[in-house]
Image (cartoon, rainbow, N blue to C red; front, side):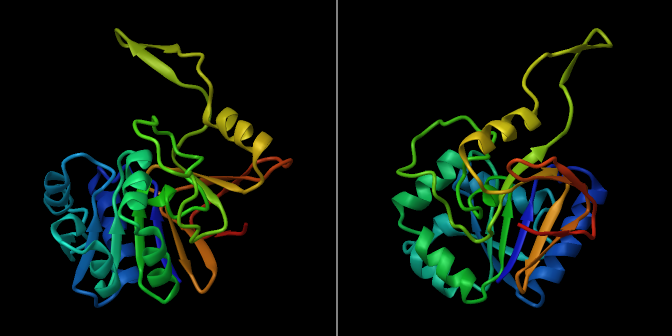
Length: 234
């Protein structure tokens, strides 16, 4: 399988360049990518934004929402790009349209998959390490299961501080590490806390970190910080 998972935060020229480089390595000579915009409400605007904000890697983006037969569109696609937004809405729509199995099958057969943020969450065994509010209720939290680990996108370590009149004050809220520790009180899957701009490239069952650092959490063990170029083992 060929899978590229991004945390998000591709808002600087450097990060957009990193994304484009990885997309070209990942998708190669493919001309058109089937874009899945279901994580946001306005599908047309989302499709346009990907190109307008230079998040397309030079590829032509075609929204799956424009086709009368989404399953057939996936079966015929050369590559698929699942965008970010609200993971609950994305997964719920994939269930409603009965698309999970066809995406899984096509990726297992070699179709390259790119997921960003929510698109990364649904590539995992479940969507249980998302940061999003449950604005709707999918039939299940089980997702595509393309990789054997969970990802917490937009990860950051340490406490949160709030700026008020130029001074930073501690927020005293739970940290991401706290939340992931709670996940492991009830679940066993490893979790990769992926910093903004970071990407994980999976090919030939080898997962490699790119562009930003990450933190690997395993149940009952101390977290491990990993750096670009490191392999991620579940």
